[in-house]
Length: 402
Image (cartoon, rainbow, N blue to C red; front, side, top):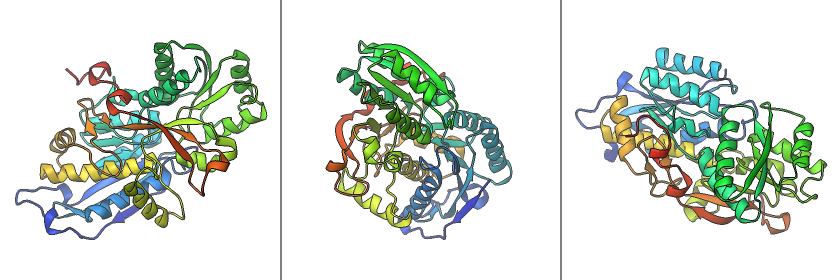
């Protein structure tokens, strides 16, 4: 386990001064960024999310209610048991107030369970399963950035509209993959399409040949990759070796971010349709944020997970400021009440089940000839309004929703 700590000096302004009755436990607000920093999702979130959290604290002024804010981080290695142990240690002995990021759905569900037990806030930006705000929702749990429903509506809907009405899924064999396959399959069928089958592969597989051959032989027009990170990148590379796209089938990267597209390269990724909640070249505000992030991170542009983590940390600090305390119940109430208006989300709102709803975007990866330089990778095809992208609370299965 690799743990880094950022202890930011008191830089608060008069506008952020603590009210007389303000209360902060242990005289410090401590936020934990727990994610994969050495495995298949290391580029997806990893140390880049940690730095995005640090940026959020710095931009907030380094203090809240007159007390310093600290950020700690650890690598959960994509293992729920390791993640749960770290979470318990953070909560029980290191006075961590909230845990965020939580790449990998099985990990996020496990840590959300620990957080519920300990009555601490958790905000998920790196995991996708809708169970986080569905049947396993928590009064202290929040889901930022994206989920499998929004990916299904964005990418799945676009592919069906373009004639891709028969699907076969290549699915990561854990909670995230099942959820993404189920959400996308149901949405495809709701639009008149058919699901011809699926095959599951282990996390961090290296050989996808047998899985791809099954997908190829299915005759499906679209092979939906219900996986992420290096799993998706490696599957796309091996699909090229089998001539799958040349044979007339299309690949749908159901969770693929700017980081993975950049790693794969335009020659291999060109033409892929994908859904993200943020892209650096959409506005002057986004470009300015990306330039700051890039300067700190050796020329790397942020993806939606990184900027989503920045947003989650910022909103958590705003909620403490609004509540006048870091007490969990009061902060959770403030998070539910406050709109999300920042570089990541415009007019975002937290629903009763903890899902933050905001606009998502459908992108197509550019051809090499269309790109003007490094990181110029996407062209925007459509905006998916938040009330369409995310499930209505009453439909989520969350027992907290009346």
